[in-house]
Length: 292
Image (cartoon, rainbow, N blue to C red; front, side, top):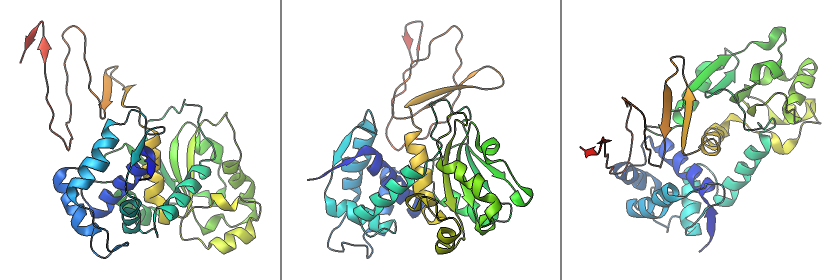
C-alpha cells in the first residue's frame, strides 16, 4: 500500500469537503461518501464514511508534522478522491500541487507580519473571484481573509502591495502589456526584503497568448484560477503551527488551537472562545485544584 504525505492528503480531503459543501464531521463525511461514489473514477472503487474517518481524517489529526508524516492509503481510493476534485487521478493532482509549490515565488523567511490571507485582484474581477474563494473553504473553515482591490491601469508597485503578506494575487489579461513585464518578473525572482508569500493566479487569461507575450516567464509556474481551491488549501496547510498566538489592539492574547490541547495559566484568567470540532471533546477547568 503506497504512502502519501499528510500534506497531500490533508489538502485533498479539505478540497473534497469544500466541493461537497460539507465539513469533516462524521455526518459531513457521510454526505461526501454519497457524492464521491456517484460516477467518479475508478468507478469500481467505493469509499465510505468509515474509511474517510478512520483512515484519512483521524490520521491527519494525529500527525505531528504534515510535511514529514505519511499516511498509507489505497491508490485507487486516493485516485477517486482526486477525480472527484476534477483531476484525472492522484498523479495529475500532484503535478498541479508541485506547480503551486513552485509558483510561490517570494517565499517568506518565517517573518510574514500579516495574519490575513489577502486576495488581491482587479476591482472588475472581484465579483467572480469572491464566490471561488468561498467555495474553496469547507464548512467551519474560517481563515482571516481580506480582499484587496488594485487597479493597475495607471501603474502599480507589486513589491509594495505584497510586502509582509500571505496572498493570492489574481492577474488578468490587462497585464498582457510590456510595461507590466518588469513588475511581473518580481514574482519570479527571490527577494528576501519583500518577505511575502505570494501565489500568482491568472484569471480569464489566454495562457498561450501569455506565453507569447512573456516568453521568459517560467512556464511551470503559470497557474490559473481553475486551481484557486488548491492554492488556498495549500497556503492554509503550510501555514498551520498547531496553536498560534497573536497580539490584538487591546493587548490580549488571541489563541487559535488546532488538533492540540492547551493549558492557560495566570491570575484571574478569563477564557472566551468559539468551539468548532468534528470530534468529541472533554474540557477540564481546574481552578485552585478544583475540577468542574
